[in-house]
Image (cartoon, rainbow, N blue to C red; front, side, top):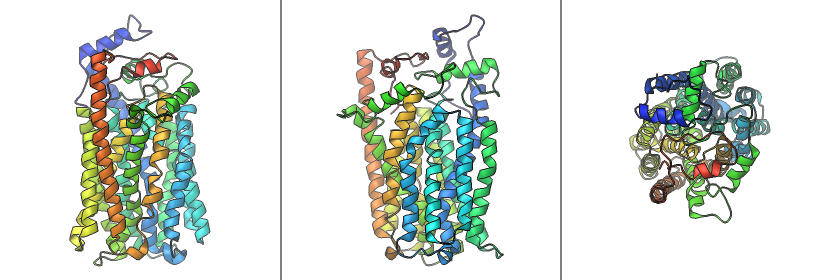
Length: 503
């Protein structure tokens, strides 16, 4: 059960209720306790399912490193750069199909999600049947297409149900599914490597990790709500309460027209906080270039880790391949704990940048240790620090979700962010060539450099947004923090100017 420390005051909630359009006279203002109860209901319904599904998504994309040590490279020719190309092709498809995140806004989310989940589960499963490198390349391409429709879209989906100042923690819980996947993926690969049967360990790995995904597509169809208005697990009063706290300083789509609003999507493409030409300073420091570069830097450093951590540990020279798979789990367990902790604190203190900068700085130290140390103990300790870059991924996604006021503009902004950021793995998956084993120093230094870049960008973006907040306060543009934005067309730009940026 999840609780929040930064609950609004009773007076704040009453102010919102009085401003709400269509407020009936018999609707009593919600108490903080009632709001917390509704939040808990949403948490229990949404978070476990999106967490498990994302965990399986990351597991199905990153198990290639474990499968390699479990015998895949003996069954399929992975000589030269062939293994690197499997990771690169996945991310090429992943980048090209980032625009599909708007499907979560255009179609009923429960239907769209169920189809996507079954799609990637099916592709992940049939990897067990490949007989050559070409077949595995085709599977990796379609896996990238299908997974691009899920992971990048869930932060957008969660923003439909939570207030701006509480969505960060929920997105952290969701993102921590990646750390959990890499943790139990390594442990599972270690166990399967010890089993001898008619099915090769690498084939069993793909089957055991792919088939449950197909089964869970049914759960996505049955249990994911499309919107607050259609959340059958909430009663009428709870839906009204939820609608009002989601609409604080962002616009909630209500009524019959809740699909994608193309005019608002186009606004996201033209908005100075996205990628408007010519770019303004605010545009560079908001939802377009700088967050995209932050996300790019995070992905250069992190995307390669699940593919190469087992190999890096194996090349320390003191562990077998099976033990290396198992030892890749503990660093990700620590990462999971840190993601949830930092996202909780960032919501509590309403700050994203300082926490993200701190996490990426720790990760840089971890990569530097691995680049300079030679002892197995020091280099394995460096892995624990390096994986903390994923905390910055979670904080960056929630940071950008806070910038745009409307649901359709958030869809456009998140698609732009993901398209820029997901180019990072194209570099990250190619900086650990096999001929640089066992230390992979070039890859470590490149990863460390991008972690430091992320830290600098976070600090710069935070300082600039603090300055913008002060400027808006002096001009009297910032609304009461409890201001609720009505669902009206053509006013998103004006309302967005009143939002105090979370830095």
